[in-house]
Amino acid sequence: MAKTKQAKEETEAIKPKTTSPFKEQALLEKEIKDFANKFKTTVVNQSKRISDYFEMSCFNYIVLFYEINGYRLTVQNLQSNQYRYKCSTSGVQSNFSHFRATITKDKKKYEFEIQHNLAIQSSHHKELFTTPDISIIKKGKVKTTTEYYDSKKRFSFANNIDVMSFCEVKQFNPFPELLFNFIGTINELQKDIMTNKAKVLDPPHLAPSLMISGKPNKQTTRIKEVLESRYCINLIYDLFYSGTTTFSKHNPTNLRTVGQLPSS
Image (cartoon, rainbow, N blue to C red):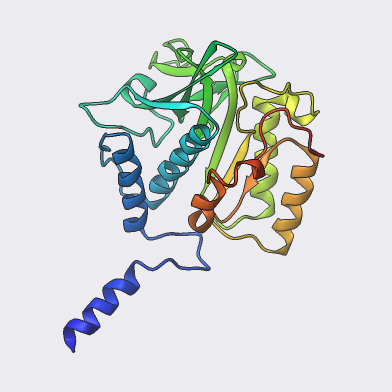
């Protein structure tokens, strides 16, 4: 009887909480390990924060998006033969891993990188930078300088012209200020999105996306509908429980790519 009760309690402990924007760490760890196994590598266990695990999970979803859209994905820059996610804005990119996305169209090969917490140059001013959680850039365009900080500490970044798209990750239930703040980031990094003048990219790239763990309410559902009808963006809710469906090969058309008009 005691064993049956203990087994039941252990099962209940890892069940998803349907109303919370937080997911059990054990479930996220398993998802990340399964993803790494797919690419025949292991992951450096570098964090105990649930928000970092969620960010890693969202990074993996972006890799999956490119894979189901015809890109070939390869792991780059392993650290001691392990994949090392960059879960903060500090540190230089050469000390962390990333993915390369390659596709051939009309006999021409295109290569890009999916980077984690890389500073991106503003689309308005060449000396301003901000750091989205995930960015897609042209291959080999990460730069490092010692001129950014007074301390001469090394700083990794990409020039705006080399950035294809970016994503922000938030482990919250969506709320209005969070959604409107994302529009400010888009204005800074990809100003053409704001006027619907962004060129349609071929090969395609995921439009700027805000990836949120929690479920929306009536108000935030309305904001999503209006903002997505106004701009070429993706506001993605409830990723803890809908991520595998949202980034499924059966569902790619529901995610907008760069340059698609809002009415499309």
